[in-house]
Every structure is written in structure tokens, then in C-alpha cells.
Length: 162
Image (cartoon, rainbow, N blue to C red):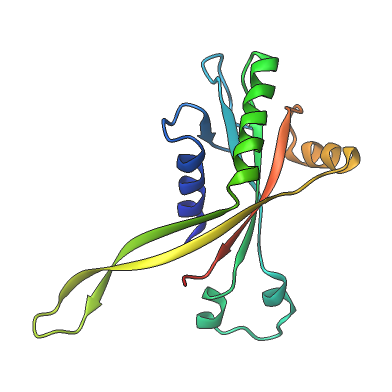
């Protein structure tokens, strides 16, 4: 499963009606109409196993999990409504930490007639909170170069297909 798919699946699972979560960069302009939570990727890295190996083959790398840090920020102009939406998000993710998905991608299959066949590929990712101290939170928002918004940080670990 790729990062884009995992982020889209997460947003749709949390917000099936697509009126709560907006995917975008932390510094994106928001308007008064954006009464939502902004989902932003703030870091992407390979798993510790991959970083500690001196040589990683391409095929082996694809089987290792990716670790993606995502930030949910309240961009609702009504401060208390934004806090309420963050609380709803936290409650949802406390009860839903594992997400499964099926991706379809075209592959060429060797048969008597060569053609494109859809291959179903399972994917799984987990979501866990990343608590930050006040100092870490301040450093994160300073690094992002924007005004602080109430927010929560989560780690998505995208596992290889099973």
C-alpha cells in the first residue's frame, strides 16, 4: 500500500461523508468555510529495521513498513467547535487502530491471450498517537513555520501486503 492510499483511506474511514477531514499542507490557506480538521503529513521515514541495514535490496525494501507522521489540526474558525472535532477524532482513533484495505492495480498476466488483469493486493496500516511534550509541540509548530493550531499527532505504520 502506498502513502497516498493510506492517507485517503484513513480520511474516508474517519469521515465517510467527507465534511470533516481536509487533506493538505499545514501552511495551506484556510477560509472561514473550512470548518474542518486538516490532515497533514509532517514526516515520512522507513522503519528502524530498514535504517539499520547496510544493504537493502529493492524487493526487500518494498516489504518493510513505512512510518508516516500525520498531524490533525483544528482549522475551524470557531475555536471550541474545532476542539470538539479533535475530541471526536481522538475518540474514533482510540477504538480504531488497524485499517485494512484492498488495492487494485493492473498487471500483465501470461495467458494464451496477453492482457491486463486487475490484481487484488491487501494492505494494512496501524494508527497510534504520538504524544508530544509542550517543548516538542512548540518545536514542531516553529519548524512548520505557521501559527499554532490545536492539534494531535499520530503515527501511521504502513505494513507490507499480507
